[in-house]
Amino acid sequence: MKCIALTLLAIVAMGRCSNDAALLLEGNLRLTTKFFSEVAKNNNNDSFVMSPFSVLTPLAQLVLGSGGGTHNEILTAIGMPNDQSTISAFTELTTRLGSLEGTVLRLVNRIYVSKKFNLNKHYAAMTDQTLNSEIKSADFSQADKTATEINKWVEVQTNNRIKNLIDPKDLSKVVVLLVNSIYFQSTWQNQFSIDSTTSRDFHVTKNITVKVPMMRQTATFNFVRSDELKSTIIELPYVGNNSALYIILPNDVDGITQLQNALNDYSILEKALQNMQTDLIDVQIPRFTIETKINLKSVLRNLGVEKVFDPIESDLSKIVDEQSEQLYVGQATQKAFVDVNEKGTAAGAANELKIQMSAPLIMNYFVADRPFVFDLRIHNIPIFRGIYTAS
Image (cartoon, one colour):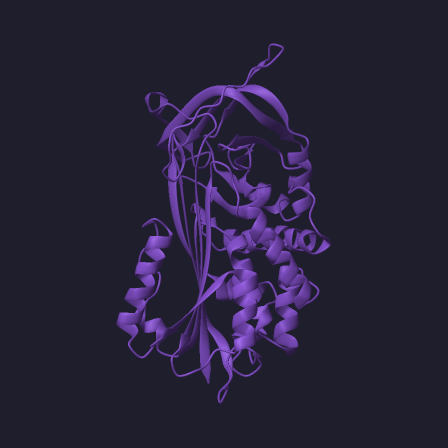
């Protein structure tokens, strides 16, 4: 039997869209919600970041290369009815995310195929045209050399943020390796002054307090208090008005678990975001960097994607021409990285936007001095989600 390694990495409402694209966006919301819940409950109260959105493309690659029960499970996971709808939705979504003013969003997919096998030409054409997947031949028997080449490519795609993604020992039984990279870089519309960053108390729990670098500024932001989430939400926009970081701050110091449970119904957060209003706010949030490695195999199994990991039941017969042995996904890993600082997320040029209001506003305060959820969105599509706990 031969296995496929599924490797992903991530660094950190649309306008009118087709029914297929709308289905995919709803599927992403459901996947984000379930994915977040699975990772959070196994994370021992540590900070983490993840990108369910970056899982969509490799899963779509597997949809187009699978059959039978394997095919049906993956389609259900991404919320699509069939292959044609999947192709249509990804084509539209890729086009929409390809032109973002003031923001770098790099979505790169690559399929490495063992030089012992021939990739099915029909499959290769579909993934190239639909998912912009580059296809490379690889000698997995030369594990150290191949891993080094792939890792160097990953470093370039992620601006040196992710290193050593592939472990040579993981390539011994690999026939096909799917690598997905999402790299996001932007700056705040309203940047924080480095001079305003000070060491402040952060309440990990009611009984544990640590010092963190706390950024601070006063400006106009979208803001809402949600009774259902028992939280306050602020929108910190990036330049270009197409992406933003949302911070969902529980009312209570120990409210993060209750917030996680409330987020299991994705409609509650979506409703809250639709009710945001603009206010003058004194904002204080930590400067933080988080890198997380996630075992996608266990997460996806808990979400109902099981057959593709089974060496007997997996059906990936459409990927290669000659299948003398069963193909299955033996490894699935995601590395995600987010860096939130005074300039924005990752590095970027300075930019400033002044907003004038026609009437005076009442000052509000948003002090993120306790564990919170963050949600990075582009065109209101969740791309990254995580929890910051200062640990």
